[in-house]
Image (tube, rainbow, N blue to C red):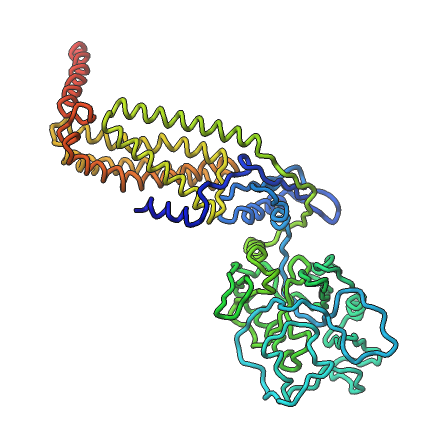
Length: 588
């Protein structure tokens, strides 16, 4: 039943062959070089920490046969099975410095055309991609009763942002007036000056106390795709930073003036990629993130301030909280449904860019933390599988020879009983094969030469279990019991020995897997997998089959070719006893 179910799952997946590892199928080797401010090699402790984080990222569930190793004083080599994995290796080497900052201004990040002779009152749209990422919140709706006749003014019109229902509703009649557009009324705080800058798209820079940051924001230009990191925007200690969108659509990109860091990536407790929830109207993948206690409190504070800004003016940039990853804005959602106080949030975005691959990569980077160093890929090489094919052929030949020898010994020594051993080996082999294929499709397991060696070695472990049981049965027959009771009594005595032996092997495999890396870890994984399969086969196939065969005439009556001839076994036991007694008498 179990084997039939596993076989059905394998065929339902549409894959009948296992995935192969780097040494058998080729792959990609990427060398990442650490960059330091002084140009010297980084401390060894930071390199070791980077290797550990990269290993966690690349292996995910731990059985993908990828390798991460330190080379020299400032290089880390990442080996990924499969062709075209260069982009994945670069993702693994990204620093993943996550920050949450409140937005204070936004505008188009592309070079601005020369102004027209007659200024237009229509604000210049930021051209921000539609369907921007959002963090859904919980809480009360914006206060105020919408007016059916009110129309948004120039200064209150959202600047190209993706709008929720709350934002697209008419401006509440009781809301404060739109952002200042040259009014002579002084602001209540600070010392007003006639030269207060006002961006052409309506940014009033309220709360920004750094004129240099404002000037930097107005001059900043981004390139499609996010452009370079601007003015050190991944620096936690910098209060005001300018950054660009990480994504662009049709050549459009947005620049932001961001305030101080409110939450850092170290306070993210969990991150998981989630498929679209069509019942909630989602069309894209998302990443659910959970904060620890400190991060949850800080996130609640910044979303509270952003929601207050939204209530005062729905088009205010300060109603947004930017999610900054490695100096680029992943998303800048508007907090328009209340402060988020539950200690968790969701990042999602346009379906064409925020797909499963992007969500998995983002969640993986956030889940395993930020690298202590910045890395740049210095070389990317494709590894051929030619040598691996020769190794695979040699390994399969060696495995076939070993299996043939085991079958020959079982048939020669146990005769008819050897058929039970051969059948059990066949079931164990097919179960192992199906398990490898299923693990490859669902857990990224790739069969390497080390795995094949582990599987071949496990043939002996599996045969040991059969031999222990068979010898117990034969011992009972030598003592004069009939076959049927011998099968049951022998099982009670043999199963403890089988379980203890398999437990020792499994523990050794687990310890070796967690303490070793690379091929040794792959060998340990294969040995542990086949040990579990051995227990299943012995308990659910070998023993029940023996109970059935003990009722047949061929085995039940102890045919001379059955391997369970009680008379022959007793004569053999008596002969051995006499042989061992003779030296004892001579010594006496």
